[in-house]
Image (tube, rainbow, N blue to C red; front, side, top):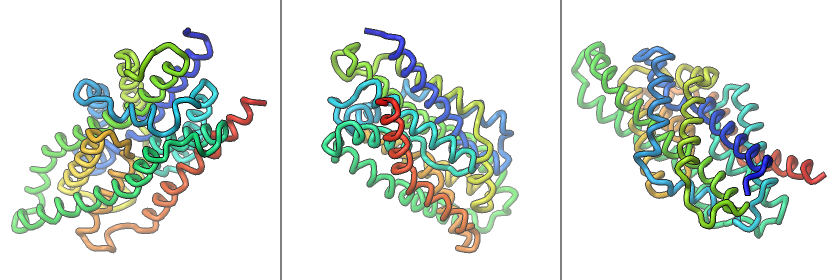
Length: 327
């Protein structure tokens, strides 16, 4: 039965999706803006379009993982989902204000974990699914780092004797493709997490008989994340695009190609990963080809600490919020 409370929680879920796009827009546009291939307005418009169309290209295996593979479906109810979303949104606001490119995805995972444990204890966790998420929290930025380093090193060898102006002119065009792929992969992986949460709630409240993502859930999720991406998050653009390392179009192409490949492969495997982690790892990998001194490791350490804190911090906020709701 559709109730006012259910409609309100679903609306909050799509607000989280909007803020996910707002917070994570930097991931798909920071490099193409910092290399001055596109203006900020054109970059976010392109990113928003590909965020929206992503659901029609890939399946919903990530949604199934988030909706039924992180916490036990038996503990899911309105208070658990509301607390999980609140924990994720509050942590996103904090890190957005500080300009730290943390993961909205992992904030949501942390929120689900905190609410479930607060309600039913540790047995409420699906340790196998949660373990995969935690494993790829570490592996995905390393894969992004390695891919970007290898792509950039290969391009340096191929274009070693070419004038940098000619190389950059060529890769300015290619960046339009690689940036679009990052936006497509972001819409594919990140929008599915909200699809999973909303579908799990509909199953728990008896409005769906099995975990099958309805079309309207998918459309609203991708539309919300696309809208959030359009409005963008410029604090994080500055951190990722201008403060970590110096970038030319060839670096931007390497970073975007690496990040998109990592995210799309993970999505096809049904593994929820962080677009933020994949892009940040790729930025560091491409920058490292210019020497260790080319990367501002102090800023990188701040980002890593924010990554480490995301799941426990959002879990604590979510658990506290559940306690307030019970009172």
